[in-house]
Length: 340
Image (cartoon, rainbow, N blue to C red):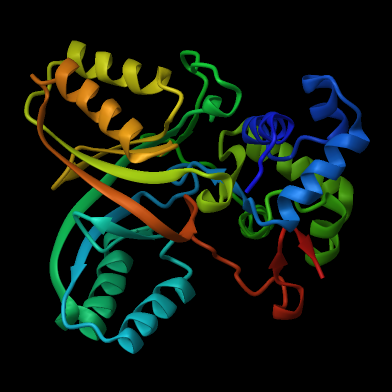
């Protein structure tokens, strides 16, 4: 697909702030709001942008149990595979489902407020489909950091420009209205406040007030979006790292390297089978090999094992449970950034 340099500039501005207006974007890139609107609508119509969603600090929202699993399947028929993914995609407490080639067949996450709910979800899944799971690796999320997509404009990242989720102990006091707003913004991060007010039966002013409160409290750290990688001419890899030593200086060096590299988008700290996951959006496999070779060379004293997974389909990707999935009727379901 032909994605122009102007398209990329618009995508970068939306990556910085998914709720940016056409006028704000136009001022940032030196064009008119009408031009931005046209290119934005084309990006949505062609499906380059799949979905806007609120990047939530799941710890502050009181969802401290964020458990990831790398699964390898065996003995799956095509019909059973479709059934498994339909089950995962329908589960409001499975916010991430990424199908992959390489080390595993899928990466999925369960999120819950307590260990009992998590155990119930896990047992339910493995009772239904455990016979098809040949192996599983656990990754317990300890913090999620998202870096800007500066590769879109041919620049390196700058230190501390990131969005955070997890890794905190402070909980925010969220009302039912707050949580319903979060669900709507997970469905569509660019949903107009007038639409949110209409769905929730409250005033627009109250929606503005609660949104500002969620941002100020760090519950909503940004409005992000998901890309159709094939349509933009990119590949997505989620790479697993096992850390052999924990010299803080060297870990800080590794973080600095990742934060400054334009193609490393998500830095996910954890424990379990792996201590680090990186999401890398990159133009081709050769570029990925060069990046991984460079990392292995610079940090050979840190890495014990590195496994590469090419993500060929992202079914779901957010940082938060969909607590109120039925606020928007099926007839008004999200379609290319608008509601029908």
